[in-house]
Length: 437
Image 1 (tube, rainbow, N blue to C red):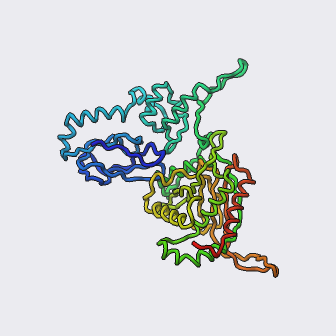
Image 2: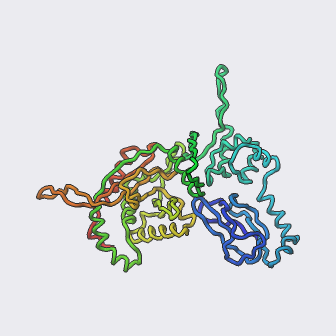
Image 3: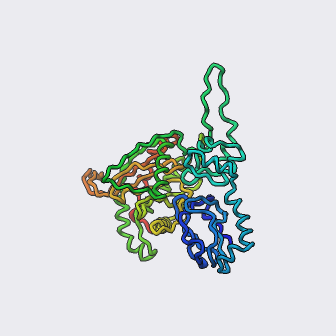
């Protein structure tokens, strides 16, 4: 029985094998967890599709498999030695091996001889060999795949644009060797920054980053290299929201079986503001601005491990407050329990992060590429404020919070970025305290 890497969500084309839960020769039950794989930031356990004995593994730990690749073979008659030596299994293995390792010896040798630490899939290696792409050219390609890996699309884009590189120079001007031009997404960093070397002392503890922390680190550095960040701040009076929630939270819990927090109320206001200012809901591809039709709100969520993940509420503008509450709570639970699916973290067009949950008043969040803006929600605090009335002004206690809006100054100017966050605050401040839900 061939065990293939299944499709695990829209646009997911590959996965990294992070751990085999069974060894060759182990008995495997139907639907028993067989292997752990990782796609972007989501880890999944894949169950066995057959009952028998694991007789062959085609991908070792930390290797990348494409969707549809055969990753293992299970003997369904329960006999390891007989099955592995049978002509049928040998024939299957011979048939699959070229697909798994479709790299000629010369290409394998060329890649291994290079000083590159990059991993290239067999398909990418095969295309490089066929197109005569050198090791230096291959290393120069900025990958858009997981952990910066070069994908099939990246190398085909490179091949397509290979002939368009600058070849014009005057005879009197020395020709500087050109770096291969690669057509990639706009978020790929164009400048190489030399990292500062930190030398530990004898009393320091050295902790190796886990896979997710490495992904987050790379993504944050890439975002700062890509987008010139600007942050605007607005203070909002959310007294009506605090009073309204306090009034209805018990009845809402009895009726819906869910706790209503401030987050879905804030998400509702943000979705409304995006509809008012749709140019906040865009991405950049070179000199093109891609205007998104859907409003998919990502909500940055802290995991028990201390890492961060951003599940996405799809079409948030089409959900009422009850629907938003259930979506927020379900995604938060799945994130904490490590049950998010790949599609749960894809397709976001705008991100919200709640720094107030850690007691922070405000923050300057980093944009979640390829989006162009992100909003940080500060802590809701009781503050003394001037209250204007027909009878005159007086000092009163109000619930206030700061909204911190970071945006990509390539396409979002201060006018748009500032007006947007001000509109969010306006929606929050005009919340109807007598609203029915």
